[in-house]
Length: 144
Length: 388
Image 1 (cartoon, rainbow over the protein chains, first blue to last red):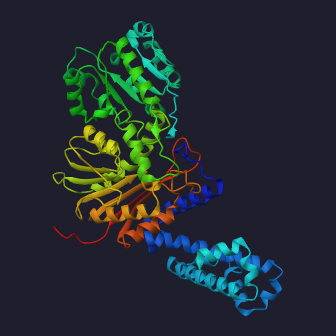
Image 2 (image 1 turned 60 degrees about the vertical axis):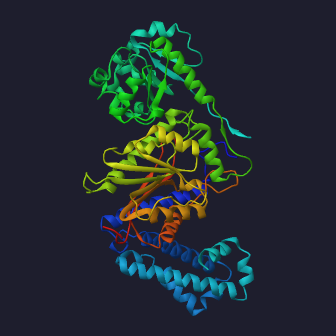
Image 3 (image 1 turned 90 degrees about the vertical axis):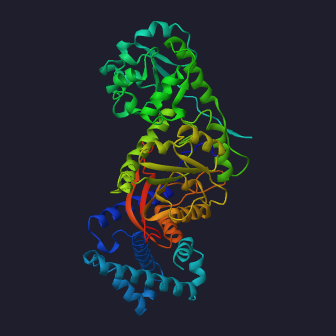
């Protein structure tokens, strides 16, 4: 049994959860001040928006990793991959200039694309190889 | 049974003022300091109180209460009531400067029960804030207070056997400490009163405005119905005005509930069963809140408690949670079940079917931490009241 009520979190968990808490507070304050009317006062929207933003980040990281891997040249021959690349990596600032409503639609699209990509990668001939990687399994657990 | 080794960093500082010679010669045992009236001049007070775990004021007439500001306000006080004076006189002289500033972690040492009762009524003090002394003379009272503090710090809190189980742990810990060391039964059991008072101050700073906001524009003649989950010895009951509030607290520890009833006889305190079902009807309260309770419980218990809090709160009423949302990984020996704010909000939405609106979010950093650990969430309940 712990002898310390005020436990000491591991750095990684602590940072993640602390960032989440502070981001949540900032998002709430923005919503209250009228900065993002679509999420004003709704805990569903607040947590959902955070989730969607994380999905977008994960999608970008996954695309970059595929592109820089030995599979990159093969992946680039695929039209769908090129479309995703174009949409999420080549126009990084596009989402910043969107209205709140447009940004929500964009982020929901990113979440859908991530789910489809993970399914396709998991089922393809290289699915077994991908599944050996812990980071890939983490993404599968989180989004599938 | 394994126990928490309670810390003993106790270093009480006795302000003896005009009685410093008598108190110094009284043979106080253990680590302590005795201050004379020259040592509490404004320029010296901060350094004089630096090592203090608690400040015992034995000579109220010469102590500069107005100097207890900023971090010095975190030092818990024990005020020895002067003998031979009545409550009216004491209230006139010390009402504003001392008594009205006493918080839950401050106490009063009194040899006269009637005098204590009168002051308690006037300043809404809790019974647990009394340190009984048989002899009110400073040199004798100092010995009794020193012995009482020593006994409190020596108490052991049972931890239970094996893995942490929330209900067992908190009911046993509450039963062990509530009656004899109520100020250690809340916040952190293995830290001294100064640490716990400072924790309380940070929490109070966040909660007080939200309590006021929850009352809102409700007419003063209409009682404000408040429910606290995990009320312990009732420390948050002192934050509400008795004349305008019907405060109810629930706890799983019988010892805690008994202590809370003694502390605040004007309020109601009930036992909470292991099924987490609140023994109240639907829509009975304007405000339901918990302070550092949820993060000590596993997800199914959290869900059940939130659902029950929502049920007993009136539409338009508030639910508040002051919890830790930043923590490390869970283990069988940890007393904390980590849950990030997003996960908690997800659970809140699930347990209330989304019938809440977020009203306030505030992150909280405690003074001993180098990171933000806590957060306060306030939501209002949607819906139309069944009865008007």
